[in-house]
Length: 574
Image 1: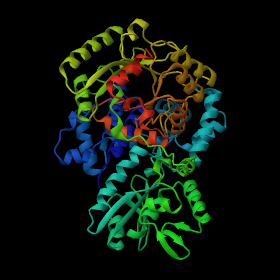
Image 2: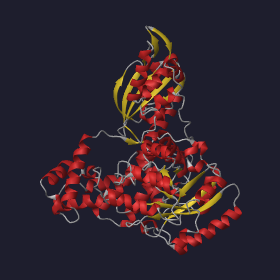
Image 3: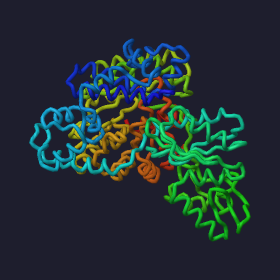
Image 4: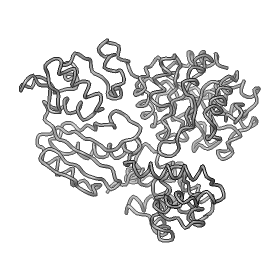
């Protein structure tokens, strides 16, 4: 059974969690966390790298020991170290780590001081008022835990888009190899590029349905078959992801793709338009009475109700139909529109590749320019740069720019926004850079008023260029900090600075709704990878999906500009 990057990363994360609960060496814990991040962000599956005989130690953060463990996991689907750690701790304790706000350190305290081993025991401890008595918790923390447990119990499991993509891409390739299959398309929220995916909907056109169904339910990653009929089947993969397959006729493909892509609200609105024309639209086609008149393509479905084709990312019934009726649909941003990346890191801080390696990778990706934006000194965990180390890096950038052709490196910094809104480096240092990204990396718990004022004060700084990952959220891990984002966007317009859409799969930050608001206010957004290795540029596909969901077009996006125009825009904010 193929072992996906997400599976390997999950094993390494669990090992790190269990080691931290046990109080193991922090450097050992960090090695597993770094490895999980490195593998989880790879654009190519590690099992494919092993099949090609490639040396895994060339991957960021992977040494001989970790490479051996990856080989063990890929070969057997298990890790002996993880199994041993699980035997040493209560079996349900890792479930506690899925509760928002509970990291390994807090789980360790709850386990050792209150003997909390399960989510149910955690709930009772919070309900009975016992957690507030522990050092570092308090009454507010206890209430937050109680609410988080209640919310966790009501949630259905959803997968981050980038994780779902690993399973979707593999299944699509698996089904496409069957003789007689002409098309395999993943529909649903995955096609709409939602941040998280509850399940996968796959449509197939084929000469015969039965062989497709049999091949699907026989897929080696299937843990349970829920249903298997003549044209449809549903399964649960070993990872817990449900996948629904439908084999459809060629003449119904467009109607089925439209129907199963959704969203439900969008489809209902389209069906109402059809009803006004005396038509009926379902997954089989467009009908006038009992006669099918269209449905072979999605374009024909929209044309039947007098509309142009509406891209999947827009189909949320948030005004896209009215724009389509008026002939004013946005020409959505595409990956090929990007001319460069304005947020990357190197080995100088917490990246995994050298300056030269990142530059050459960006050039190979087709970029014209690349901004090097290391962390500043306050972020000591990432070995942030002080003024002297930043000056040395700027000199190295000058040397590389004199040597390299086809790619220009820009001098930047991802500077910490401190609690009072000041920036982490002196003005005379920031003034020598091409761009300054301001970022909140601490004090996420500030009130809405204080957090907003903090960021506004930073944006008023004469050398501030762009607000990086503006809400600070990590999908399914950390909620966004409380901030008045409409006010931030309006101030960015007034100040003439920019907002980042961070394409890291765990961030996808800005939210799509705020992308749309930025567009309306005339604030340019930069879709950046936040790359920490040469592999991370591949994550830009997810950032583009988020940008498209936010209605962004090429002219709304900062890093679609050629270098000369970009420099002129950057100079206005410095």
